[in-house]
Length: 174
Image (tube, rainbow, N blue to C red; front, side, top):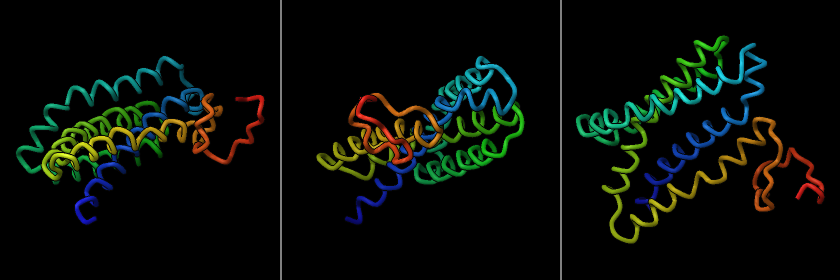
């Protein structure tokens, strides 16, 4: 069981990143009201996150080669967490962009390559397949969970029972 603890940390990080991305997409209308801006502006902030992450992905992988994948993973988690904290307290679109798009994008660009390399380095054969399956499948509940935590409408699929008990779904909503 000891060998699976690193997978718990990796899967948790993956889940949080998918949840965070989903919350931002679900919360667009709320963010537009809170920041007194347009939908296009918030969508640009979300898109900029993806661009920053993609732009620094190879750099993040190289940092993992230089300082070690485990250190790069933890450094990425710290940068991502700082970006998330800044996003949570942001009072303007500029600060939201810095926290969400820049810091979280750079953190994710360090976490994702390190995650793949840590799985490849820590697991062999069958266990590696299981680990990649967990990393790929574990974040699946994050998207419907984001809908309920952000106050969105319930998912349209009947299998979304794990979403949240905050909604009182009638049988007609299925």
